[in-house]
Figure (cartoon, rainbow, N blue to C red):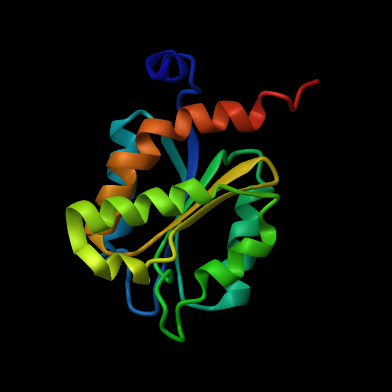
Length: 171
C-alpha cells in the first residue's frame, strides 16, 4: 500500500525554502542549503529561497506570498521553532493554516527523541499544515534536525501529500 501511494505521487514538487534567522547569511546557512540539496537530489525544484529574520510580520508575509504563488506546491521553513522569546515561526504561520497536520510534528519529535537529541525533543515545536492548498512545513534550524525531517519525513511523503492536497481541486 505504501509503495502504491509513492508510485502514484506527484513528482517535481516546486518548493520554497525559507530560513528564519537573525544571524545566517547565504554563505553560513548550512540548513537551508542542506534542504535545497536534498530536494534537488530528489528531482524537486526550488524556485524560491530566502533568509529572513525572526519577525512575525515578515515570516507571515513571506509564507503568504509563497502559498498564493502558482509556482509553489510546498514551503519548507527552518528555524524559529523553539521556545525562546525570538522563536515566533509557529505563531506566524499557524493562523494561515486551513488544515493542520499534527502527525508531522508528533512524529518529528518522536524520531528526534529516539535517534537524535533525547528528551530535548520536547522543546521542538515542528509543525505542518495546509494553507491555500499548499503544504507548509516548519522544522528546527539545526542541520541535524533538517536532515532528520527531510530524509525521514518530508522527502518520503511530499509527493503523496501534494497529490492529496490537490486531488479534489479540479472538480
